[in-house]
Length: 141
Image (cartoon, rainbow, N blue to C red; front, top):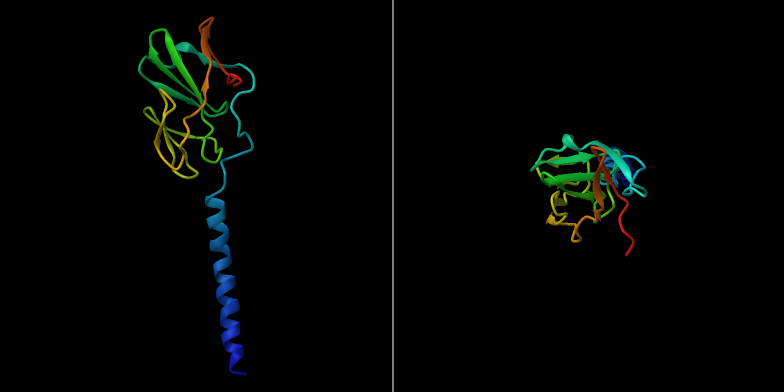
């Protein structure tokens, strides 16, 4: 009977750790929600004046970031992280931060600022038409 208390303790420890293990897996999941792709057709992002010269704006519903470089120059990038395809939901100034694994990107040029991602964000065609920003889809290679 001396083996029984040890076996019982092992089972109890495993039961106590199970929720923590599950939480760890959830924290490392790949993004929030099902939309894990850049626009597949041109999308209207709203008024061009919503992005001030020298600023960047994140459009989470469309997975796009737009930076206004000058009065009439805009740059747009997909906000699908190139590491594990998580939709990026956080913008600090011009720095996009992926909540899944900590990759960081420059919103003005798509370049990686911090790994684990090693590939830049996909650039999207962007234009202003009738005072509205229209972006995407990415050009086929």
